Structure formats: structure tokens, C-alpha cells
Image 1 (cartoon, one colour):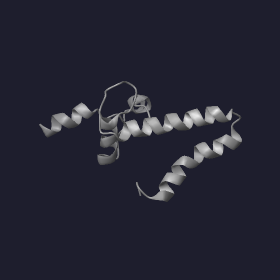
Image 2: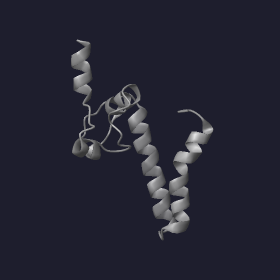
Image 3: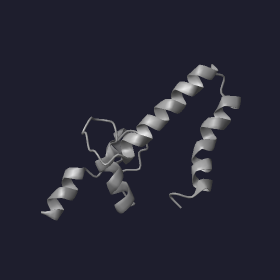
Image 4: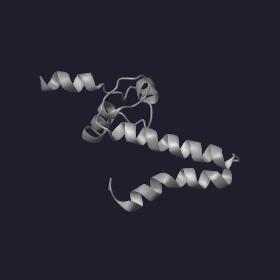
Length: 96
């Protein structure tokens, strides 16, 4: 379902609905929408920049290959706190 248009609509819906529920300036909403796009591109660009706590491509790749790890959408902070963080370096060690 990762590339299904319905999946994209469902994932974008909370932010679109928040515009009508949470009082915020429209430009703030637009800024958050742009930041969400930049962070999504960062997670899917296959470049692991290792900038803590930002979730880069290395962490996100592990999320897609091992579904029990790296749930964070934009940061690794909650994964780190709850023990679901799987470092890309751990994956490289297993390959070697």
C-alpha cells in the first residue's frame, strides 16, 4: 500500500483536518506542510546523514525492511526512548 493514492490521502488528512480544528494562521499551516515535505524527502533520499535526532534514509530503510523498528516519522527520539531504535550501523555489521 505504500504507493497507493489512498494511502497518501489518508496520511495527509490529519494535517488538512487540523487546519479547521486547531486555530493557527494559514501561513503557519503552509510552513508545517513544507517542513513535512522536506522531512519526507530526507527520509526517502537514501542518504544517511547521521544528524541526531533527525531520521535519515538509513533509519527509514530499516523501517521498511524490519517492520519492528524505527517507527518515527521525522525523528528517532521516540524510538530511542522506547527501545525500537535500530541503528544503520547495526545493519552494516551484519552484512560484513
